[in-house]
Image 1 (spheres, rainbow, N blue to C red):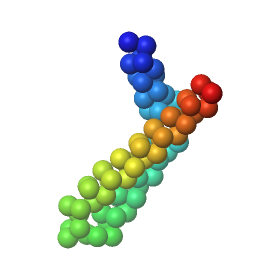
Image 2: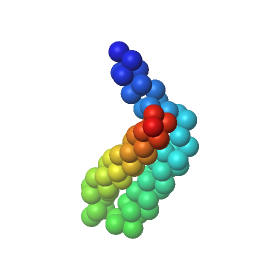
Image 3: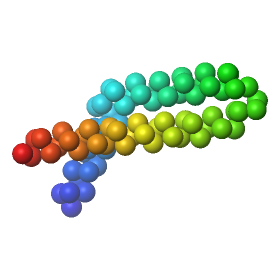
Image 4: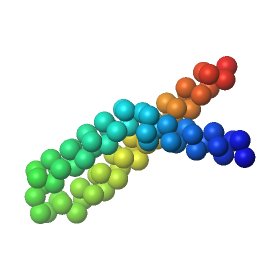
Length: 75
């Protein structure tokens, strides 16, 4: 149960306490908005996939950073 609590606290910290994740989300939304404008109607369907890909990469990078931080604290 304590490991589940630790995972929850780490995820909560990424979403609430980590300002870089929030900034990354805003940047990804801005890039998606610009891509939708630039591509017009023809590429608008693909822009959603671009947003999903950017957000998945952003979350994975932040989880890896959090994992490294926890490993340093444990060592």
